[in-house]
Picture 1 (cartoon, one colour):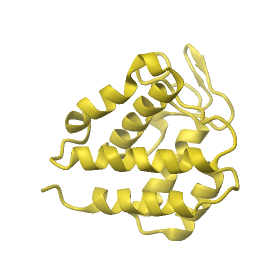
Picture 2 (cartoon, helix red, strand yellow):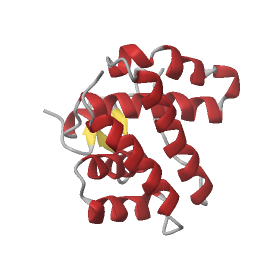
Picture 3 (cartoon, helix red, strand yellow):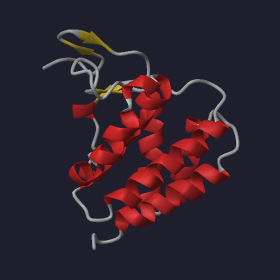
Picture 4 (tube, rainbow, N blue to C red):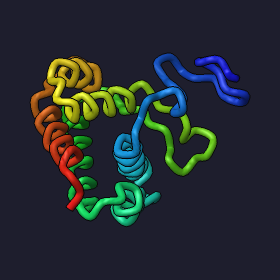
Length: 156
């Protein structure tokens, strides 16, 4: 079994983790994958990652409110992008070699949303502070809480 910081062909950067080492459920994975496709679209507009995020939403979330959830993920990302000063590091969802690595930035994003889902405002605030690099987190938390409320709701 590989050590926590290495994989047979990969070495992690500080703060990164292998997907298999994180306790992510299906909704966390759907949020992460959706976010990754939006980030791909931001960094490589010609990739049209946003189309994949939107068109595969129902498959990823497996819920009738998938379009709403996808929109809410985008709102969280946009609020976070307005707050952060540095570039968000993400793993390309189309790369089979790196899609199983969760960057430290992605971990803070998912932790913020997971804590919001669990109604743990203290942990959500701490994770959002790390995500936003100590900048303003109010709008990020409001967006994360709205997404979390929708994620907690039973699918219609």
